[in-house]
Image (cartoon, rainbow, N blue to C red; front, side, top):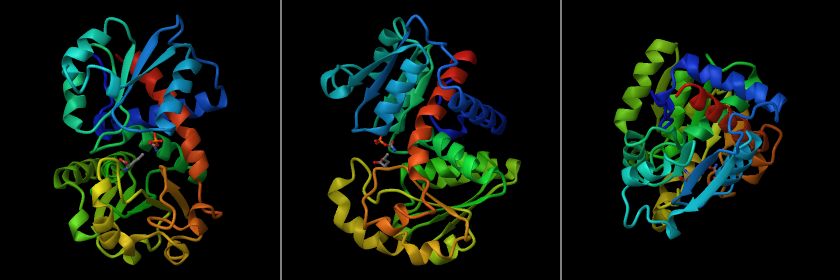
Length: 307
Ligand code: CP
Ligand code: NVA
């Protein structure tokens, strides 16, 4: 059966751990695996802008012996004249896997249901699961473990990163806290799914409106832009609602003294995080950005081996 990676809970706890272990090995031996030798091609499709995702997939596919084919939907038939499922039928005859950054999650589900090659979500409006593999790898490197740690996300609770933290964090057995205003809450069904996973893994999921309470004693502090791609017209309203969730030095001081700070980037400095924090000694953002490469290489190796 073809395995896809459309949302974080497509992986069990054991599978998530196996991919993170593999990522650690691949990071230590960058050129050691060539499952795409040939070279086989991987299609990497973008409906939205990207720096990290584009570079890390292109470099990672090349590292694995393959050839990346970067496609912008602006000048392809997908998104205009042709459906995701018809596009998948065309691509699967020629590529080893399909990576897609898009808007609605439903497009990815349609793409995956119609194809025999693995489909990877490179960010949708609802989830950013590849980023979470990199974040978990980074947290594990700095903390030595995942299960039992408390991670607090502050800001836009309806953000794709929050939904992915809820599912991936719960899968890893972490205590996931989200601090957000009442008008920017996570989707209830994602919280329910994360809750059900946490019951199995010993983790937990808690939603707060009080930023100070949520960050108190945290091992990991995370935020993301208040204005995700596609929401640019809402910037003024978002800044007004979210300003009390800004991660600054005073807020970081409430977390554990050895807490680390993560941000998937790009950051809007001065809005969701101050330069003092993002450039400070607790920030691990550059490790996090590098780990996109290693985590996604491990994901591709694992999906190809298990499909
Ligand atoms: N973090 C992340 O996905 O960055 P890009 O938008 O640059 O790909
Ligand atoms: N939440 C952000 C993540 C960017 C990598 C967005 O969707 O724009």
